[in-house]
Length: 244
Image 1: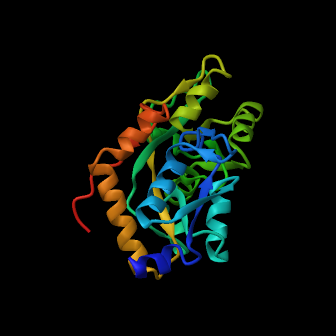
Image 2: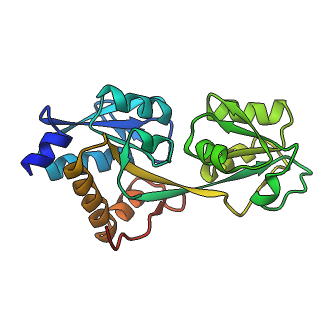
């Protein structure tokens, strides 16, 4: 445990970076004004396992969390694992997943995510969101129009009459209500996997976080937190971890 603490909590406190823009993982604030929800609860559970206190450090969006990884501002960061982020962060296996898909304007002829990826198609997306990083790497023909916030991405979609709005399914369900006649695709183009990151070259921390996520899924902790914070049907428990 000493080696793990030296890598994960060298100051004697677990500094946990929390992405405040994910409304499914951060659903409220507690009586002290700290973030609360599935992500903060997991950070507190990790600190409890280590026998230290947790300090929750809020960040406006996941890009800010990723940028802070190289500045030694946090010990663990709860954001989605993506190849671009993995250049500076080593990630645990996923503990939960969120489907990402498209909202289409009234009259759209698209019926699948694959059809959306066509020449001349313009897709609104929140810049540096996990699904934006996935689309940036995987789209072949469509063009991304990037916004600085989820609300702004909808405004671009509406005001510039774009062909699709990319986002997490729960957020798109709400945004669909703002555009009568719009269509939410049933299929998803990816599932955004939420993980626990730490700085690279920390082998003891990597092993500890791997085991923590494995056990949290197997014991039902993740499912319990999803239910406790009222996001059942919006978050899904990640598949069980059967090996290293």
